[in-house]
Image (cartoon, rainbow, N blue to C red; front, side):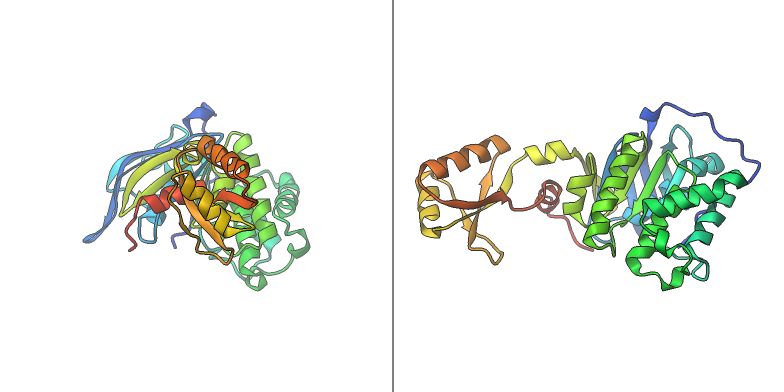
Length: 324
């Protein structure tokens, strides 16, 4: 993968622009020979929010991220990074961008501490501030105890955490994260959610590409869905949660549950998990609350009542995207 190059030493810092500008792209296209990887994509990542980038394999997500990071020039379309065009002024844009690829990729013979210190020097942090900044980031990603181990002996999850710290070393305004939860254990995933929400709270524009949709429900404010190189839907998580969804319902007596649902005129199908449950299509959260009240009033001993999938996963599955 193309390596992200920090700005040169003589690059003057760009004046701070309005945080609301965030990151945006309009009409982006990129082809590789006869392969149209990205076709007229539009995207907006507001500052102060986490935006999920969702799509199947081969949908063009990585190509899009490389263009947003100024590592790949688009054939057509425009990009704005806090008001800066990375095609016209990649130096200024890269000073604002924190890029986390899907693998650490480089410097496996250096220790975690050395990698972060080297990146800090590349971004021209004052020499006296580098040790403190490195220690702060190692603590943030829970790598202090492994600071002096070489990157090559770190696990996949530990390398992911180091990669996140590396992307944050210069305190960027925009974060581009490609599969940041890959390889993380459950505890690290919880910590990642907290870190990303904190960064958004600081006014940063955060774009996260991930296939772990259940995680994105807890992290993201909104999502952009892409398929076959095109952006097909932009939706807030609140909108996704408020739309029609399937609920998984289980009761101590499955027969009484089935009878109650039939009496309410509701169609249902058997659940797919180990639990003896049914799935029911529900129009809204208000309808779900009413259904639960009706089942309890009918004497059904409900022991489980919850959405069958996350809000963003529900949207994704309803799109019937074509796998590539």
